[in-house]
Length: 303
Length: 224
Image (cartoon, rainbow over all chains, first blue to last red; front, side):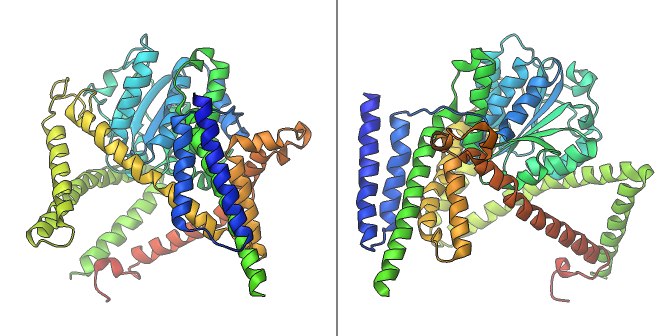
């Protein structure tokens, strides 16, 4: 039934595109409303009738995966959730996959956020990923959430030299200096790796500028696709790897499932979302071709 | 006097923070000033909330265009504020996090704010498609280059990129479309981004110096 749905959807989309292609050969432009309908069908069809594709990690994703994989057990990792609900569909899959990976490798993880909206999304990861999948881990010993603090780059400027000065307690009000994790952590320089997931400001770029460079801590980033180009100047020396958009998340999920088969069965939203993204990209490319044909035909007619 | 005092504060703090960066004994000073900034940032929330209330109450009072939307804004603001402030339905005690799972705040955030935010962002797909159709036209040499780059990036962000070019041997794997997309990001894009960043950096330095030395005074308000 699902396959039938996929086939019918593809016939509708590509049949319609062929019709538009024929119109463009005659030099006729496409109305904006028609483009919207095609995008709607291209995104909706793979959600209703899931299509999945195989992924292979590109070097920028693989290098971050290898970095986490190669850290010795009990390494200290900080993960920052710097995003809001608008960015959440794109970057939450990365945050979940990175959290899974770090905890599976036995690293000690500190969670925090620089965005007020990030704390609820961080709680969602704790509730839906960490507690059900790692019931044996203890809050405060194996991982801890210190939540949100206002001040943007100012927060980074302080935690780079004194973490507890800015975050005296965790989200439940437990003093950090009484927790097992923070016996060895005084500042960001004590972390072995920092993972900044986000896309706006403050976000991964600020982590590199205010913490990664001054404290000489490697930074891995997961960002919305539109922000990824801005992070490439920092790769590979200041940023060890970049997960860009849904594709980056899907590649990471594939690598994680291949290296740790127990995650083969867990939900992989990155991979799931590659269906709609792939079809939408194909439709956009078809429209670019159609637009160019229409332009050349119209130009020739005018001559 | 109204100008001299702010100018003096800017000059004094600016010089002090520069010293704090370059002279180690003063390093702690920079951290302390950042803490002051963080405390002030918290007050920005009060300012933001107060301003939101003022704007929308005025809109309602004067029945300005689209005033019914202000009711929605004020109701949402009040409800979320009450849910967080009074920790309604929060399974933890008074010291528990505001968004503990099971609380009204957590429920409303995930039932309303997350889907609304995601919906707004997803609308971009429609406008990106329409804009791509109109903008990516091979009108001249530069536009053609942009078009080719966009095509490679779009294809490289889908599994089809690998399906189409997966047969290319690993020795020349750069020409596999996903790797070609990474190369575009990592070379031409990187060069452009670095140039922009260096430009911005120099601009920030010169603007900061203008502010510290009192040459730039527009932040004081007025034209003088």
